[in-house]
Amino acid sequence: MSEENKCEVDVEQIMQSIRRDIQMAEDKDIDGLPAFEDIPLREGGLPAWSDDGVSMDEFYRALTRMSKTCNIPYYGEMGPRGLKTFIKRIVRKLSKCVVMPILDKQNELNASFVCGHYAFRFFSEEAREKQEEYDRKLEEMKNGIKRLEEAAQRMEETTRRLGESEQRLNERVERLERRIASLDKQSDAFGGSAAKESSGDTCKVQDTAKSN
Amino acid sequence: MRVIQLLPTISYGDAVGNDCLAIRDILLTMGYKTGIYAENIDTRLPKRTAAYISQLPKLDAGDVILYHGSTGTKLNYKLPSLGGRKMMIYHNITPPVYLHPYSSASEDLTSDGLKGIEFLADKLDGCIADSEFNRRDLLRMGFTCPIDVCPILIPFSDYDQQPDRGILKYYGDDGVVNIVFVGRIAPNKRQENIIRAFYVYHKYYEPKSRLVLVGSWNGMEKYYARLLDYTAQLELRNDVIFTGHVKFNEILAWYRAADVFLCMSEHEGFCVPLVEAMYFDVPIVAYAAAAVPDTLGGSGVLLDSSDPKTAAEAIHKLVGDGAFRETVLRGQRERLKYFSYENVSGILKEQLSGFLKGAAGT
Image (tube, rainbow over all chains, first blue to last red; front, side, top):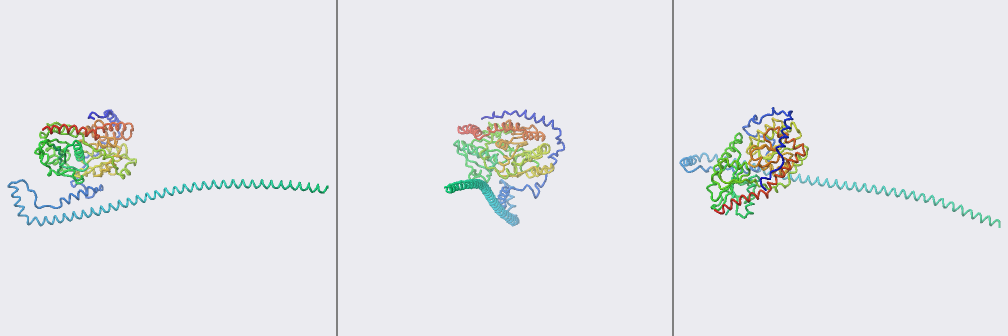
């Protein structure tokens, strides 16, 4: 695929449409917008505090840089060979007895700073791990609560269905009871008329017996 | 024949470092013996990714050096004395004028860097520039060797990682329009113009909006402090977020939460974040300066000035007009195909093959 694969969208048309919209939008007065150039430079850079904070990665990198540079060597590259460098070497040799003890104390202080920062790094990592562990436990508890809520929901659903089944059973029982009651009435009625008929026949027999 | 990559610093996760590693992989697939040597090696890189310059073996006339030119370094002056044919992959150097008010060390470094690159103008056998803008820069500096253009190789598969859930949860779907720019806090990227454009958009179009500037201010503390003060003066402190250095998965989350990607840079050698925004389907509004038009290739919404009203209106159209937004996104998706790993590695292989075959013939 070559560079000729540029898109076919008419950008100029889009820009003309935008410019027209801007001309119509006269209410957007930005003449009073402060210029960035009028903002003075802070000579000290960022203030001692910053609500934007520093990321842990930046802190670790700064710590690595500190540990690599905290030891200031007394002997180092002085430049190319020549008279100037030779004189510098002599001066360095002569001032060694004065400068070296001061340098040793500075290096000791630097090393203590770096150790202190590493200890802080250790504590902050520990705190971060604990925080992550708490977050994990919290997540597990939330999941547990969610599962319990789902189980409770299922139980509610089951209870509701059981209630409906019970209601249907009760209705059926009532229908059966009504049916039994009506059957009882019918059988009572049937039993009464049969008794009447049988007692009528007996009278006839008795009357016939009497007439004979 | 050995093909060695040389660079001043190989960092973890930055465009030059990623490009270097991707080129190494291509060279290996082409069957060449290769290695990376640098003055400074980021400790976060896997062991044996690169070796120090002091360990560079003696090179023969048949060997090839691919030198990544991106900053001030003594390497610029040491390069001609090394053996073999030399090709520079030019990533561009920020003009020192941008850094002058904020960091004399950075200003000196970039100034030395540009002088070092100019020193190499007649000492190299070939160059590859990340963009047409970079190629013109080299021609302006008097380079006489053949200069090809090849975009930076971007490992898009890395962008499919899980984004940070916290950012997505709090900023992704809260009904606030997220305008995002990804890039170091640096004067050439003109974050103050991004803030100005956001001010107009926030005040006159959509008060429920926020601006997120994703990137570290390391080395540019004075510029960052000035931006903070500017934001305070515009009463935008609660609506502008400076993330500082963030992890990769947080960058991914910001792209996914973005509604518009706004770039007002005045100097860029390529601008990888523009391609990243295309990948995450975020519509782009960008000031047409330096390599930005080359990278966008006609896609996105290109502004011919850094006027904040124009930028704000463009953002408003992208957020409010669905059809317009879709048109712009279609263009970006088409342009993104050019930057696919397969396409760019194909271009690079073709350019390297030509150069390396020439070396084999010597």
